[in-house]
Amino acid sequence: MTQTENKPEVNDTPLVPIEKIVSLCKRRGFVYPNSEIYGGVSGIYDFGPMGVELRNNIRRYWWWSMVQNHDNVVGIEGAIITHPRVWEASGHVENFVDKLVDCKKCKRRFRIDHLEPENLEQHKCPVCGGELTTEPRVFNLLMETYLGVVEGDRMKTYLRGEACQDIYLDYDNVLKSSRVQVPFGICQIGKAFRNEVTPGNFLFRQREFEQWDLQFFVHPDEMQKWFDYWKEFRYQWYLSILNHKDRIRFREHAPDELAHYAKQAYDIEYQTILGWQEWEGIHWRQDWDLSRHSQYSGQDLSYTDPNTKERYIPWIVETSGGVDRTFLNLLLDAYEEEPDPAGKEPRTVLRLNPMLAPVKVAVLPLQKNKEELVTTAKDIHKKLQRLMVSQYDDVQNIGRRYRRQDEIGTPYCVTIDFQTLDDQTVTIRERDSMTQQRIAISELPMYLLEHVSFK
Ligand code: ATP
Image (cartoon, rainbow, N blue to C red; front, side):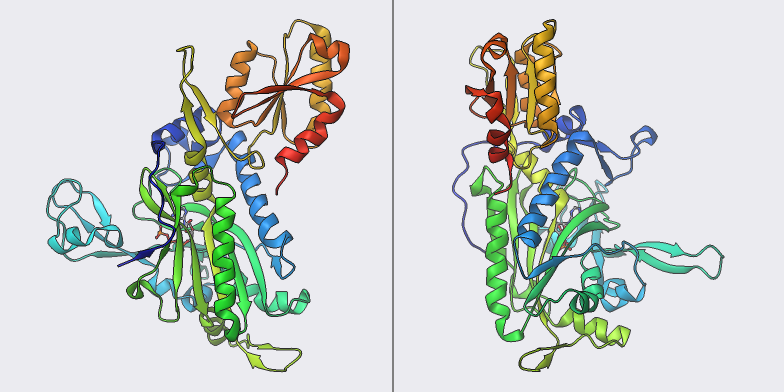
């Protein structure tokens, strides 16, 4: 039913089991289960010291590419709680549902849109072969909450089920306050909440997660041009941060998957141990969202072209992806256990793109009992710290310290040795190749900045 482009070549490196990433994330402070001391909550996670750095870098790189580097794109940050009518206008109150069937034998639950056609037709459980229930049960994914304190006067509303609705709500304010003209875009990164009935696979399907969206407003005659532009731009963006460039592809939505207003839609998919899975959607939304909000709010959201005076509701190209899926996919893409030539423990290395790595440089005195080495190393670390995330480490031998940094993806380790005291040079070790070169301390900041900045 579906059509794919950019068919991947055959992979030569094995796909990484999710359990390896879960364990690394816990061990090295990337991700922890939320409320773990109380037994945890399914589908909700916290980010630790390394995780928050990586996440911030991922977000910043997206913002840098989408907002900072496009003259016709601006950003907003909308609220998580909105007026409840928003979710009626958007169709979520009525249609934001998952349909589930249960296996009578093993009691597992399956979303019917995730079942293979033969399992669906034969009512056969894909795991144990048992019989599936025939009538799907329907669950709305919106998370309810209440505003106000007086019982009876409290207003039921929802935590936003998708972040992008705020962009439509603020569209008119942005237009009137930012000197933008169609064609232009509004970006936002923000949390979304869904009562997922089948949360799981670590960060892949959570109940609280983060999305990034662009809504790009165009004249209807220019819709195809901008749809093609953003489709390609987003694909290249993901390529720019991946090592395994053969594990990403487009999947075009089949006609029976398309919303009634959509001429076309594509998912950008990534291949992991879970198979090919959606990472981001590129959607043709026509004038659906602004028309619905005009209709439900009674406000005119049409646009008047300042030159031609033509009045119309702009059409929208949407690109909507997940910060958490990016976080997970990048870890799966970067993780490698490299055999040790001397037959010792394999080297675990995160080959993250240096511009996204949580720590950019580790500064290591060769020995911790030599005061001059320690003082020089601390001094270098203090100077670098003002420019980028730097870690000072003098615990255990230098080999172990390199390994620790490899495991969190630090692209550069700077070692201060006895020669440093004579000639003011240090060694700089590169994570992936493990090659080392000597460099003057005075050149270090510029060298590192060049290698870790967004490009
Ligand atoms: P799926 O079919 O996997 O449920 P979706 O089509 O409902 O996803 P969208 O509503 O288009 O997803 O959301 C845009 C992006 O948000 C997705 O491409 C994905 O990266 C991310 N996303 C959606 N649901 C979740 C979730 N439960 N946990 C983590 N990320 C999610």
